[in-house]
Length: 73
Image (cartoon, rainbow, N blue to C red; front, side, top):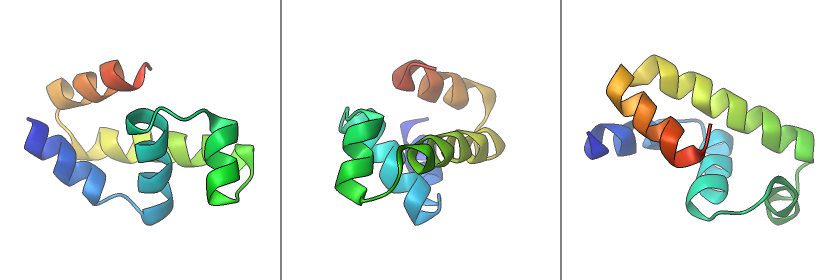
């Protein structure tokens, strides 16, 4: 299951992957991510939502529940 999640995250578009990794694995807040990547906070929010939407399409239900639990959604 962990391999499936890692593979799905690795296939995300670069912007989505960067925001997801900084938010959930780097534990940064939206404003910190925006500052680090030099993008707006709204872009950070959009990239997070897009990443989760794409993961829903790529992962089975069990894996998706694990991702959502880890990310706090």
